[in-house]
Length: 523
Image 1 (tube, rainbow, N blue to C red):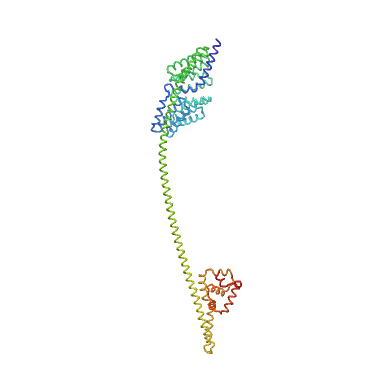
Image 2: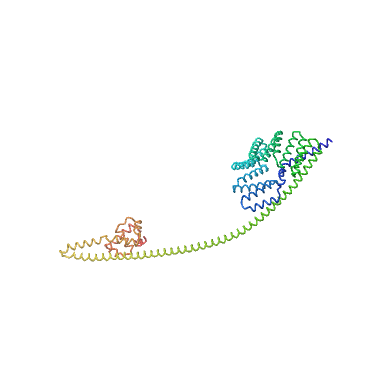
């Protein structure tokens, strides 16, 4: 008999441990009941989202889709929908809806085990509710923050915010809200093992509550308190009330939880048969819940998959159409670009040809101008040469004439006509003076240098100590004038001319045998 009791007790403890390990995820389904989310509800919200005519309607549909996923335990997907809804609520400045959505996001972060991210969501919701002076929203958010601190075992902060919530519900006379806060306070006292206070707050919560599901939870909590304080039979009475109410309302999860509490009570009363029986009932209902909800989750997941697949197909079709249109537009743009490039190239070639023709024309004009200028210069040079030759010839003739006159006068002077001698002598002196006058030399040199440019400069670079008479002789030699004419022009004899040429050769350092005329022509 003792071995049997030990065996049943061991099985009971293992079962209780297993159920407690499963309790946290099972909480997701505790509030489904008549509000049970299904694939049809999700599809309805998805369709509402597609047909939404404004951002607010789309955000409401997204939030409902998030809540459905939350109640079925799909937290990441639920969080994504709520975040999308929050973005739209911000854009449309729907402050109250945004605050409610922030509370939902905070709860999701908590269930995702990210409490550090949950608190900022609640804080922003509080700021909005304060700005809008919404006491009900403040009370709800205070309660959520208190619950968050309770789960983190920060009980002082949990008490503070739960009392803030209680005060808020009291101001608006919300009995259901006050009942929920009393239940939360009872849970905190229970965690602190302050069972009298816990029983006090659970009692207040039960008295104020009108919601059947909440009453079942409170009755189960009261049963726990009584068991923990040693009042096993009184605890079983509270649990039996919870079982009856759960059967009446068809709350399967609460019924399973109540059966498990009854198994604990009978175990403590050392009635292993009854404990085992109720433990099996609890397991049966819990498995039934999981089976039902797993089917719902699978149906929802299949629906979500089908819808996402259809959305992807539609999006792919749209993308294909967009890609086709984009390709056509790109092709047209490329053709237009090619035509533009060809046009620009043709225009560039045409402009280059015109520029080339213009340059050729300019070069032709410049060449013609240069040829005309050279022709003018050539003509002018020829003219100057003719002038120089004419000038030289004129000088030669003048000197020849003067020489003849000089000779005649000399003959007259030899005569004995004393009365004419003095006048003739003066005339002879005047003629001699005319032979040596340089008045025409500057004019001659100017014309000479125009014909033979820079000749004297080159000559002086070779020999810089030549006299004016030397320069005259060199100029006449450069013009290829004969020795007789040179003697006449210089008004000297042939012998004197040979002496002058000899001195010039010495000044120019010409070697014996080199022609003076050839040398001067080479300069």
